[in-house]
Length: 230
Image (tube, rainbow, N blue to C red; front, top):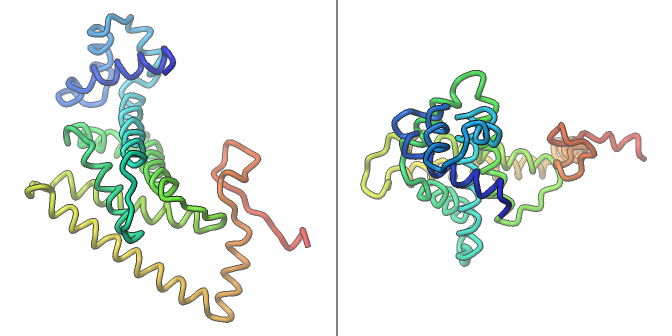
């Protein structure tokens, strides 16, 4: 771990108790800097946007821990939809205090921060699909992550208000949402098998590529007109 990364981790961890009371703002970062014996200017250099960068670092640290746990305890002998549910459950169970997420939800619900919030949810769902070995190379790469983002976002909101023992109501809610997605996938597969619509869909999605084939780093993917390559 680099010195900067180690210091960022220390500052983040030191800020969390303050975030619970003060929210994801500059004050928790200032307190963390004092407790870690770091100049405020140094802390601000590591988290230029203050609370927003702190909140994003906290979320991404949770994603990293989820993946680390998955590597140690892979989900074997499970249906694929159950593996997805298990990873979402694991991601939420790693959260030590709901108030940290509640404060984050308020922060990223602001119009100026909503894009960052959406990016974080997408990143979590991308991590889940990649961990499960997704090899999509067309529009499915996007639809899988988009649908799971909807499921994950709704589940987090339900979880924040769930006071059932062991969050059993949240897990039931999650299972229902995943079942809805699986039903949609079955309908999509059936449509793809029809002669006319199937051919049209195949031609359309064949022009869309996932990000790893993009020559640019400022867009999420590319559209290739393969009719001009023939």
